[in-house]
Image (cartoon, rainbow, N blue to C red; front, side, top):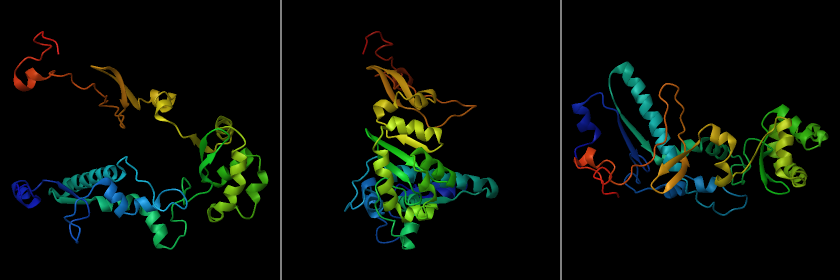
Length: 284
């Protein structure tokens, strides 16, 4: 309506790369339908594939999974178009939809379902591809354990003091363990439940088995790994120090930092040509 569609702008600049993002795609009966993250979580199957075993419907995740994934897919597509323009000298229109991004994010789960895999159902924290690979209740809190390779399985069995489990014919391969995950869980769960999480963290660490606690943000913000890598950022504001999430990139040549928000009126002179309250000596 504003004359800012791709065809109109391409006529002015043939090198233009124009990205258009819709909810359900460029054609079809839903092409003009409104959309939001929760709507697409429902429509794309995201809310059905995830959740605890036996759940009728998974509670929606309000972290913006589909929104963020759509943004990432759009960025990848635009960069690919930029790369192609380096060769052809021509721009193009790039069309992205939230539905396609949601299906891309669930590609392996969708494939499992389409080939008739019965494991393509809500299974709590359990992985559909590996076993054991899920959260277990220890004596005091949950611990997440991931076993993917043959050596990891052997070391896991040593760590839980069940060496014979490594040669049990029911669990020799990962495929067998995934297929017999209920039997395997019945053996592992009471063993993990006997000792506290910190004991298991140290034991699995010695055996080279990947594991982790489920952190709360309050403990997460003080974790040495997080602090040393500047994954959080303390900033000074009008209300004192505030801790926010850090930047996800680390550039060797152009380092980035999180800056404090401007104070009220800080940029008055730059934008309006009038001094800010502080600059005028009147306070805020």
